Amino acid sequence: MSNQDFEYRVLKILEQCPNLTQRQLAEELGVSLGKTHYLIKSLIDIGWIKLDNFQRSNNKLGYAYLLTPQGIKEKAAITTRFLIRKQLEYNKLHEEIASLQEEVRLQKKID
Image (cartoon, rainbow, N blue to C red; front, side):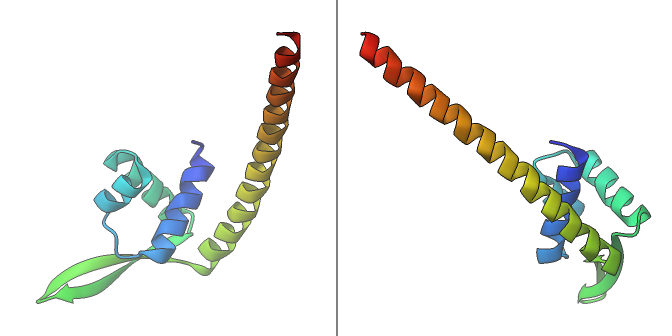
């Protein structure tokens, strides 16, 4: 999976669940905690997300990852590119399946 795919997934997950810990996010992404930390840090550094403190309960501070306006804009752009790429992959796969089906059909005629 490319870094852009991970960026998209991180933005999508954090938009829906901003209170996840990095460990929980790592589990969602299926990557190491170190990779998740790197992704979060890079998204904060480029200004797509920001870290916000909030009160969890009884004087315990928690954090929420909030998409910035730039992050929301970039998520939309990444989503568009992701969709285009997946549609191309789908079309190629569809063509390959049709070709294989034709090959099987022709093989059955020979047998």
